[in-house]
Every structure is written in C-alpha cells, then in structure tokens.
Length: 155
Image (cartoon, rainbow, N blue to C red; front, side, top):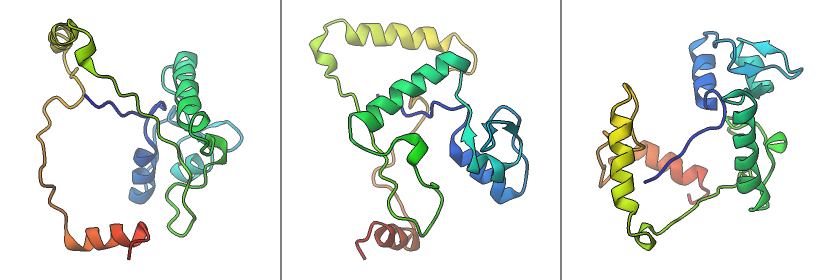
C-alpha cells in the first residue's frame, strides 16, 4: 500500500489551479506573508498553506518535516523556493519512505482485511489506491516525455 498526502488543508496544486483559473480559494486554505487568512491564490502562494486538523495536524506536519528534511539533510519548508517557478534551481526537497515487510507479522493481512471492511462502512471513505487501476505500461504523449527529459537535465 502506498499513502501519499499533504499535511496541509489542501495541496499546493489546488491553489495554483485556482490561480490559473483566475478564481479565489476558500478561506482556511492559506494565509498571506503576514499570517493573515487570504482567499487570493497569488497572496497564498507568497504566504503559507494552513495545516490540516488544527494543532494536531500541525504536529503531523512537524513530524513529516523532520522525517523528510531533517533525516535527509534537505531544505526545511521555510527555505523552499517557489515550487512552480520554471527557471529556478532544484528545490532540494527531501522524501521519506517507511518500508515494512508485512510478512513479519502473521496477522497482518487478516487485520488489513478487517480494517478495509470497516472503512467500507463509512460513506465516501476508501483505502489508499482502492478503485484505481494499474497503468502498465503508462501511456505518455511524446511531447510530455521530451519535456520531462529536458527538465531532468537528460536532454
């Protein structure tokens, strides 16, 4: 199972999509550079995203940052350059992965099934990846692949 999420109310992509569409964002998604709530996507990008779940969500974000930046020697969030800037150097963002062999626990798959059945009882809830179909091979437009190679410095 793979679980990837932002520890903010919304991911940055939602705000950049709102900016591109020329629409405001809901209050509670971001604050401006002075820490004041904003509905303007431009101001939000120059400020900060709001942590999900109040102070408990902030704590999860803190742990994610310590794992992704602290253990990898990467940039901390306050030092990350604008993520959507085309001509900026690499962002030096860290990644943290926890890999566990479920075979070390005889009951793992039984417990996973129990949890999955419980999740199905909650309307709208799903396990990570549930309902997704594997794309193998992945079809990618030639132009997109060429741009990817260029951005990676391989062309």
